Amino acid sequence: MQFLYYSDTTSNITLSGNEHKYLFKVRRIKKNELINIRNLKDDYLYIYKIEDINKKEAFLKLINKELKPNKPHTFFHLGWCIIDPKNIEKTLPNLNEIGVGKISFVYCDFSQKNFQLKLDRIKTILINSNQQCGRSDLIEIEILNSSKEFFEKYPEFMALDFNGENIECKNYNKPFLIGPEGGFSENERKYFREIVKLKSFILRSESAACSVASKILL
Image (tube, rainbow, N blue to C red; front, side, top):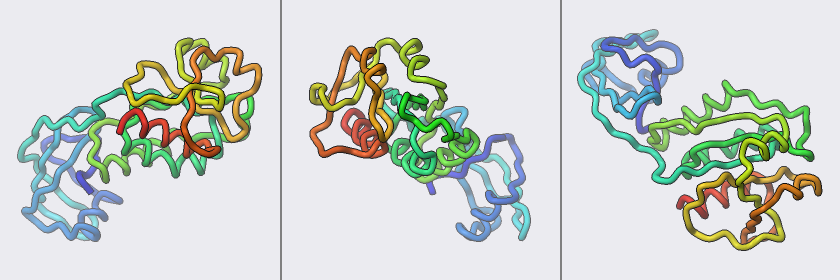
């Protein structure tokens, strides 16, 4: 783990619950040792000293803070038509590590409307991923209720579909729209202006999302 997340990086903090468990049982941190903390709201790395630690709480004192941004060099916006939330949750850490900047989850024509994303759970997954990979910012997340809403909000976008041109390894300043398992409807394809494809077999939605992000960012 590259750092510990804690939202309130004041001069003195008290850790309990999962944060304390990580220090006490996983890291075996002892009194007077140092621990790196980020609040994921700014680019500072906060360095704390363990003033005291017992079986329930850890008491930390701020020693120093250093401006150390660790963010993606390129902003990449992914429009992802909603699939089974379990598959989305499994894929989020990969997209986070690759460096995706924003994800617009979209209820497309072939998305199952009973699929409900839990924003609190998504945030927790991303925080845990950041602690592991060292990223200092969180992916921006939004949920759009229809593909029409996406088309109206982002009229200039790239659609990943079978009859497009091969994706090039360059920076794109437009969102990339990835369809659900059933693909796009004919009505949705009427809004497509720029279409790209990957040199691959037929990909699952989550595989396509990771492949496109990797192609552009890595």
